Amino acid sequence: MSRVSKLFTYILLIIFTLFFLIPIYVLISTSFKPLQEVSLEKMWFLPLKASFQGFVKAFQKLSPNLKNSFILVIPATIISALVGSINGYVLSKIKFRGSNLLFTLILFGMFIPYQSVLFPVIRFLQSINLYGSIWGLVILHIIYGLPITTLIFRNYYAEVPTELIEAAHIDGAGIFKVYWKVLFPISLPGFVVVIIWQFTNIWNEFLFAVTVTSDPTKQPITVALVNLAGSKVVEWNVQMAGALLAALPTLLVYVLLGKYFLRGLLAGSVKG
Amino acid sequence: MIQIKGSTRRRLLGFFILLPTLISLGIFVYGFIGWTVRVSFSNWNSFSKLMKGEYIFVGLRNYFRLFEDPRFQTDLWNTLFFTLFFILGCLSLGILLAVLLDKGLKGSRIFQNLFLFPMAISFVVTGTVWSWIFAPGILPKFPQGMNLLYKLLGLESLQWSWYTSTVSIFHFNLALIPVIIAAIWQLSGYTMAMYLAGLRGIDQALIEAAKVDGATSRQIFWRIKFPILRPITLSAMIILGHISLKIFDLVYSMTGSGPNNVTDVPAIYMFETTFRANKYATGSAIAIVMLVMVAVVIVPYLVSSMKREVSK
Image (cartoon, rainbow over all chains, first blue to last red; front, side):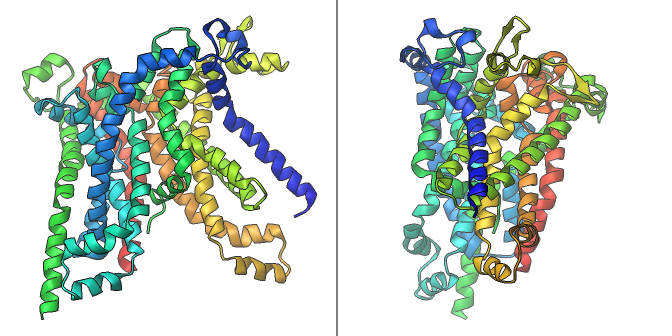
């Protein structure tokens, strides 16, 4: 490649980098400002003196909600991943008549606008006394997470040679034994992809969270953040610090396990 | 003989393993959609009517009223333009970034990670931050956000009212532009990743052979790479399209419905109708319209990939 075209490429990449960094710059520089430096006129400037004031206040306000989000995300992620894994095994290796149709019907569930099930969901949660609780949300995220976890594991196990499974069956191993002894031990990468995907999505989810939980002490972080931002308080350092706190867990996962995050992303769209 | 029996038993057992998933999705997806359809045909447009529990069938009345409702008409136009520009933006930025990164220059990895990280962040966080950046302030004296940045850079002529603008060009509310920018910011890394995976999947031997035959890099792009990227473009359009048809979090946290509903979308209207105004029947009708829009995009995609699967 010529030097000119190399230079040109870098210039373009840097321009786009600036676009991608604008919100991050505002987010980080504002959240480290002490209150007296937070003003509209100075929003584009770096803080003169870094302060953790914003973070301390945001953490005080949001820590119960951060905790709620963890209580929600951990069981929902693990259970939907486990069920998706065994589903994926059945749909990739034990095909039966109609299994492709069933798989398609399962997949449809991941694309629907949740508005179209929202009213019944709320009535259902009210009827089993879980409306307004984190556990109600856990159930929703397990069920509505099944299509994507099933999809990812199905594609993952499709790569495993069928002969391997057949051989185990001929040796007299049943379905569960094959799953446990043959597939499960090689499933770690699949689980990492699914867990990251579910963790990120459930952590970031808003519609169910805002409609199912109304008590501020029971709301997940996304809802609490919107309430904080909508409260008309001009402490933008607190708002931005809050936004950063809300984004931190998923960002951390992305930074540490970006490769798997990417795989989940592509698995959710490109099939087969 | 034993062999066949074993595999039949396995299939039966396989079906039973799927059963909990099938039952729960059968209820929570298909059953609940049916329930919502039923509510959308009812007169449950107030809390007291719902509590009375008396179901009066009104047919398509809620739908007719909805399509005559100026706010919902605005929502449909907004969805149309939002979807159009959002998809165009994500595709073009995505392919451009992918091509730039595919050159394999030093540091490509870092750029790639940077362009992709917004995918890991919640729409709610994005909305909160962009809402602040695009807040217009009070013009001309007290500009805020981007308008202030323009002033600092001496570009006052570019200042405008961003997402509070009520200017509309053939039903396209200009106030949507900042929201579209935020959405592109969040999801163009996704299209980039899809294109990049496509480009990197191309057999290098093919490209080397073309080079030996004297093909220019432009020819290589249009004749070899572009045709491979076409199916990816289709998938990306479907995925992005279904996201934009049901977009809620971003608009809700960034602008809400805006003055004269300039940034309103069906999902916001559905939310307010159902949970603020307690008009459950109308809210359900909006939800079903949204579902139909998404299904029009998604169902052919699912059916065609199922057929491809069967023919394999």
